[in-house]
Image 1: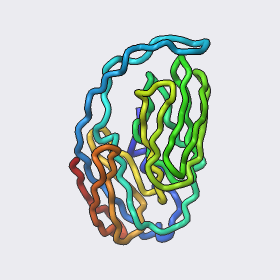
Image 2: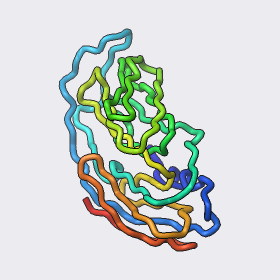
Image 3: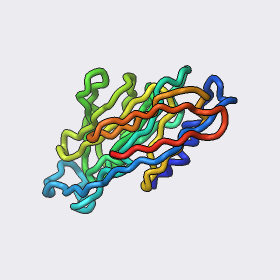
Image 4: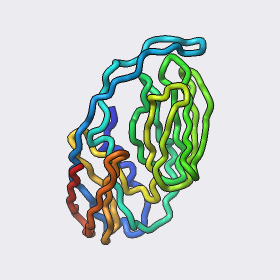
Length: 218
């Protein structure tokens, strides 16, 4: 299970100018999840063939939103630990993944059949080919923006990677709460991005200590 607050604390540990005078951005995101139904079972090519996850599953909700800051200056190297988007139960997990520009994303296959990962987004086009259970492919993302990820074997599989220019971002927990810490004091735009519902913006002034709070409602 994801632990969003731990993720945000790790992201906030990046060394940035003015970190001694740093505050936090906290708040809530409200949005609704929806039920999805998988297409009928098909024949899977390869040495491993088995069942899959439940036919009806949840998608959406606050965990499909990325909250991030614009206007933070600095040189931010990609993290040493690679972000992951797994293939499990014929679904990309997580459905939405924020990463820092320059990050190398791992795509482990946790299903008992072959998968593929590709994207046709201009600037970050890639096709990692087919690979079996227990294998992993990876891709370095070098352009800020949204990357739509698909599997050419299973047309129902779709996910989103939001590539960002600074490490001040996070994903709300299932209750919609978020916290972005160690933000240098100053004025910024805080954005909440959803892959299908669009983007909302709030203007904030982050104090040298303490927190400023914002809320979003999709």
